[in-house]
Image (tube, rainbow over the protein chains, first blue to last red):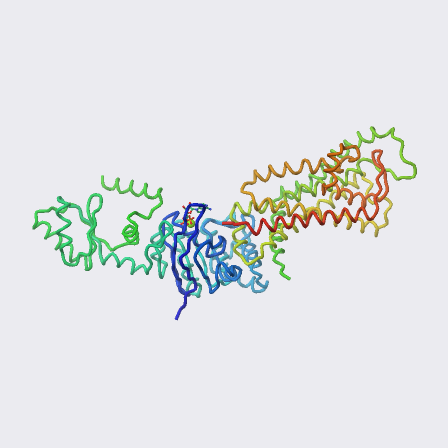
Length: 328
Length: 278
Ligand SMILES: Nc1ncnc2c1ncn2[C@@H]1O[C@H](COP(=O)(O)OP(=O)(O)O)[C@@H](O)[C@H]1O
Ligand SMILES: [Mg+2]
């Protein structure tokens, strides 16, 4: 069966006194899409930089494509492709030159190089831009070119650090298609993201990472299932009375207090359990004022395990503004 | 043999060619030096030294010819010191990450950048020679075609080794720094003493002893000496001073430049091994 193409054990990385990666261990299987999902500053890029040999390994052990990162960085470099978090394209080189330069760095013979460039320009649909300088490309085109570059040398593992950051929704979906296509050709993908939907949509397995630690690892389905089948949000006339009643009910897995209401995780079909809950509560004289039923999302998983929402500070402000506006 | 450095070289030359302003200014600037400084100063020097009786039997050259060698040397110095700067931009714009994460051995980055800096210096040196001769510098005076060719090769050899030394230094500084402003500052600080404590534009014979000592360990002095030997000859007088060189002196000057380049490469290699680029 598939073996581990990346294997990391007790990895730490410190910048001075600050611990950016705080003892993580995980394995990535050959052929899968594996994601690090975590907020900005979680330590995702630091971990990628250690795995790609840009940062020295300080503590712990890591192997990539069968080579030890600390002992054989050269072999690791030969086996991987990387798309960095920020755009790293020379503005004054053309698309073709960018790929040519990259192939040369890896000593690809010229006929193979030319063939591969043609293939990849077709894959990322940049054939008619091949002689355009990169400064004239749109954000999405730049990203596609970088993905093509990461694939030039047919790496066994492709590292993608926040591949769709700053792209518009349509371009993001196109990128996802490319990433899936690349994976189907046999390349293992290690990606980091702070977008729930991206991790959810793309990954075979996800590690949620926060403050340099892996909190939980599993498939998207498994992670959400740890929260039960359905989630119910309630606001009632007597919150303190509601909690013990709900907790005592059949198929209610766990009840958590929120700022105004509460959420109940259910071990069964919410559409059937919800009417029973409302009945039971009104029999006790408690009036339900707000109700919401939903499937657990990655957001809920993250909040459940870290106790806070996975959002950029900026995004948090704007989304709470929307909520407030919506409530009025 | 691993030819990875050619990849770095190729990219840097593309950039040199694409930035038209950079290309044109680096070609025009030395010509302007010759045209303005050269002609203005030679009028002065020729007048000031006109009543010094010339040494009998020693060929005499005018100031323009004397300083043209200095302009070649000076241009090479500036171009080489700034030659490593593209590494700093690559680092700041994240482009260096691609290279550092690739299997290319790091010393090839140094070689590639050095080779492209050297190429630029070659182009500039040849332009100065041609332009200098056009405006009246008596380079290769009375030489046969073969001798001229050999002399040009000799000059380029000196320019090559000298430029490598300063390109290695420039690469070492670039990879260690964070900001182009800092680089600019260091370069200004370096160019002044190197340029003025040398025999590029005037003789060092009249320097105070301390300055003379500096000029004797200054690589620029040896480059200028080499260029004059090949372009003018081993025995001539200019602005009232008699210059004569033995092949041994020229050989030692060349060895000094090789020594300098070796030390600078060691420095750059050490800085590159320590460099972390993320
Ligand atoms: N070069 C550095 N020096 C000091 N601190 C750093 C450096 N790079 C990253 N950090 C810190 O380490 C933490 C993790 O950063 P990073 O790995 O970039 O997170 P992520 O990619 O998940 O957003 C952040 O708090 C960041 O400020
Ligand atoms: Mg990051």
